[in-house]
Image 1: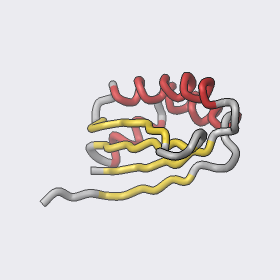
Image 2: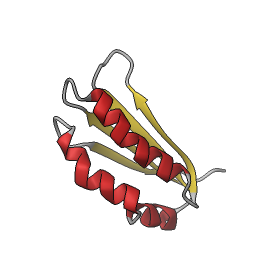
Image 3: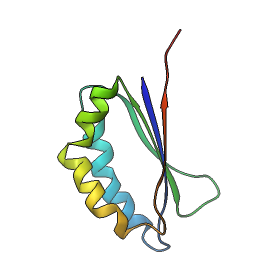
Image 4: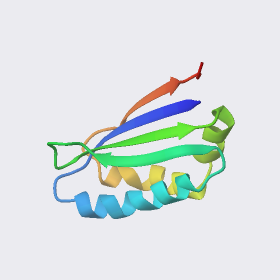
Length: 96
């Protein structure tokens, strides 16, 4: 399984617009073949820090996701909302 965590810091005052924008990515991603889970959270104690936590069946599912229209729209528009580049952590998980 492929796990991806993405930390995002949103410009103050843009949280509602960002949440509407990111909802399209979350909903589209959840419907993809190979998606195990796809969640988006606001960090406790922060008004503008968020995290996406993605679980994918395998590398092929991630590659498919990276080429979807909703992910491409995310890439082209997310920079308008952020104060800095996202922090992306990729991991492999092999259940025993």
